[in-house]
Image (cartoon, rainbow, N blue to C red):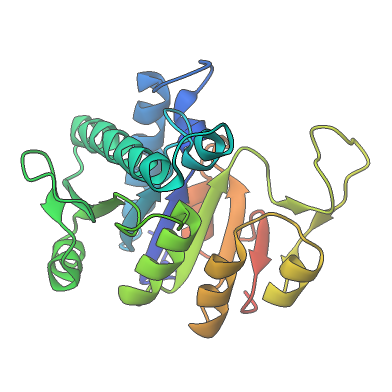
Length: 240
């Protein structure tokens, strides 16, 4: 068995990925695929936690730009992340993986409250912890939540799983001449305005020396390869 490069990581998943081939909502087939990918990565022995966006169900910023109160919109978006977290927990259970959802919003019927010490104990026992409900406060993205939780649990890296195989100088979907970066500094990402994560998330990652590895979640085996230290996608920050 390969040995992991990282003892503990935070996996950041976009809610958009949960749609799979659908226009809206959650694709159960994608969740089962994702659960198996996570299971393969866990075989290396790394402790894994997860933060999920809610864009497949509701995007708070977009709603506020269309006239909805920003605070109300953000709390609605936080609720969408809880829905995604519960759905992923179910898929992980089907794959034979024990997990816990911890929410920054109190929803006792279906989640635990976020308690740092409890999160650490769950991971030490081989359970995956899914952090839901954002930071519990409006005006913060799930990218910022990911960086914050990664710092709190002292994660060795943030794995940002996307639909593309790394970070490019422009949108590779719209421009076939887009150039992919193998590595970038935090400053490079901000100065080039590459839209990998928001500036607050990048600042938190930089201040805590947490590298961000951006890769394509749809490519089978990428989670396990990244955990083993193989080069996948783009590494931001601390040299790989």
